[in-house]
Length: 115
Image (cartoon, rainbow, N blue to C red; front, side):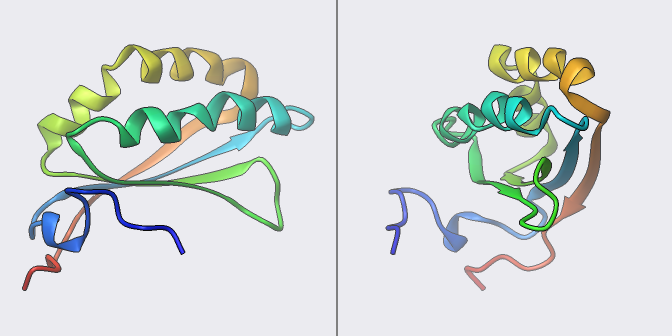
């Protein structure tokens, strides 16, 4: 079982935190390339102290269909994340690898775990 990183966890997530659920689908035949371009984001984003939670998931029934789950304390922290060079480089690769770009749902955490 993976251990929680120091400074991370439910107690760090306040009510009203800025959450993102996003999805991207690879173009047919580009699944492995999109996966290879996307996997490095996990370590990079998790190393950002402004990021509270970051998960990259792939649909077992539809390889190349990725779901991101991200939590930041506020929208400004999320926007700063999106401005990072490695995120911008990833976005720049999407026209060649992804079918239709990224679909983003901007969510609000309704209940912090510290309560």
